[in-house]
Image (cartoon, rainbow, N blue to C red; front, side, top):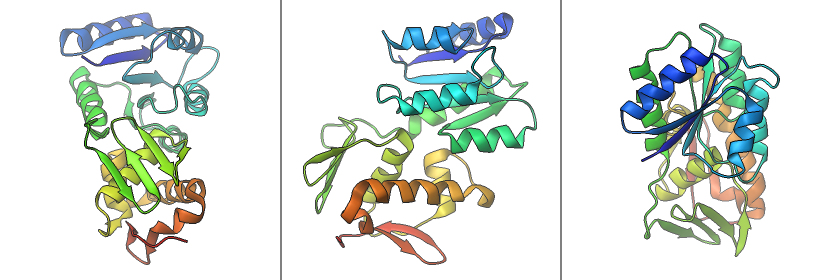
Length: 227
């Protein structure tokens, strides 16, 4: 049973969502601000965090950046709760590493559907889900990537993106396809998010970054070419 943490300063909203989550198929715990969340994270890591942007003290965007900068919490899926119609918050949140967003006011069933969708996008951890192409190895069970025996530190989105490309070696994915598969969106205006993540992965792969090939006018594919 997946554990969900919900950071929301409005007690009535927080309690209602936690109750609804526990009434379905999740365990859930609520927190009023980032400080109480990070205290809890020292002892237990959840499967997903619901994070309101408007919070007392440190806001949700800064909390998200803090989560992504810490190795222990970098890979936790995060769904941001934004103000209705706030395109700016949505873009900043996605660029900061959010996996999805839900605008207030929201329906509980919609929220639960979004949670399930994000959790489904995480690669299934199976013993045989280790892929090795050339000097790059990716293990969905251990959630590890190594290059020539050296382990790399990837964020959750970087891992999922590389895993998708390696598992489908040779197949060309458009930016919109990758945006939909990894982030759950299909919007041409946000495809730069894919480009930024590809660039970061290539940088971390070093000399082997050329194995992710740009197909001009289309998107990306993974090849065997090294260096």
